[in-house]
Amino acid sequence: MYNSIDLRDVSVEEVRGIDLDLVDLAVPAPEYEPQRQFYFMAKCRRYVKTMSEKAGRPMTFFTQTFGCQMNARDSEKLTGILEQAGYVMEEDENKADFVIYNTCTVRENANLRVYGRLGQLKRRKKENPHMMIGLCGCMMQEPEVVEKIKTSYRHVDLIFGTHNIYRFAELLCERMESDRMIIDIWKDTDKIVENLPAERKYSFKSGVNIMFGCNNFCSYCIVPYVRGRERSRNPKDIIEEIKRLADDGVVEIMLLGQNVNSYGKTLDNPVTFAQLLQEVEKIDGIERIRFMTSHPKDLSDELIQVMAKSKKICRHLHLPVQSGSTRILKEMNRRYTKEQYMSLVERIRAAIPDISLTTDIIVGFPGETEEDFLETLDVVRKVRYDSAFTFQYSRRTGTPAAVKENQVPADVVQDRFDRLLAEVQKISAETCSVYTDTTQTVLVESMNDHDPELVTGRMGNNILVHFPGDASMIGTLKEVYLRECRGFYYLGELRE
Ligand code: 5AD
Ligand code: SF4
Image 1 (tube, rainbow, N blue to C red):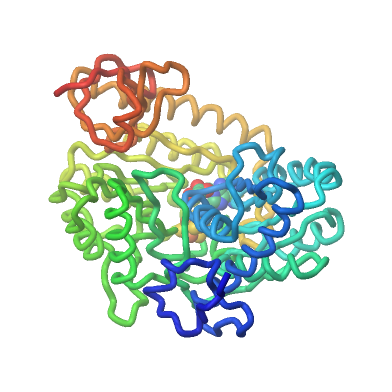
Image 2 (spheres, protein in one colour):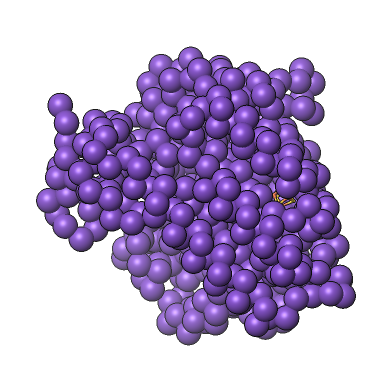
């Protein structure tokens, strides 16, 4: 084959469409991104081809995502790069030649699961000469973790962090050319690389990063240390990406950031999140807009107004409260009081009466007393969340809360957690049932797991609905009559 394309002469706009088999690898790699990464994808592609020829079958990969929506989106980028590099996706981890875990470290148990899984991979690697193991994501930003892997999990091939995920192809190539464990972790970055490939998990919906990192330093949270300082993408890049997604059949997008309400503050030409939403709303083909996560301290009246008027923004806000005690909120460095949170909820409900509110709550933060906990229960009872993610406080090394002396005993935490969960579940079952006998718009997402006669979709507020249908409906919006509420989901019938 005639390898004629010198990627150093190719523009950013053109590079996504290039046939990587035609890239000239005799010339040096481009110095700039994203062209440089496409060069390494082309190079990996040739190594993978040789491995496939030797094995007499395609080389396959498996990605496992731990943690949040941000990680899920990052995994789509990993998938896009691996597919360009010539690997084929494999659903069964036990059969894959390349296994990569995109890790989370927000709570201790996420870390423990990764170590457990890594132990199991060791034996498989002995059996498969082509096998490689990669680790990336938040957990890798912690120096102790990398040390532990270097000494106790020598069978890992490649480790990188959250800031340099865009260099995945280059690191993979480096590993293919050497026998060493490749480790590349950056402490922080101000760089955002656009236009890398991504392979969506769903054809009809997609996450879109609008910002990276977090500047809030809540005292329990490791995110600002592992995801770095807040950086917003340019509105133009975001809009272009969403237009491309819409052209490709996407009808629902989820704008992603640790704190979307502070989007745009650090741009050369500052833009507010509400302004960005208005631009996104104009894009033809996009029917539903979601976003997460909103920090209560930054949620503006401008945003509430934009949501109230919008035809496309889902009537749903994820508004983590974390605790209902003003004293604990101060210790958490959340920068709002219980009263401020409650008054925000009131303003939101006044402007958007049918809004669905969800939240995150931590129990057992150091120094939390029974009275503090009762304040949390009080907020839960007053706000009546549609659903809530409840967490037991997990001590994260390096965060200010981890060194506090008044850690709450495990049995007390467990007891409060159980009481909170019971309350949250009781209220969500009640709030969920209010839509019985109404007709709602549902985005059909999949065939039902248990009954082949049914499809499963989501209402704007995220509640699941099952109703009779077929695969041709997947990815379309349907009007569905909600016949029966079963706790957290509905059984319905197609209207039309
Ligand atoms: N312990 C328990 N929960 C935590 N979260 C973040 N850090 C911790 C921690 N150290 C929860 C918060 C956050 C969600 C993503 O995870 O509730 O909103
Ligand atoms: Fe963590 Fe607070 Fe930032 Fe959320 S806002 S990522 S809880 S530091």
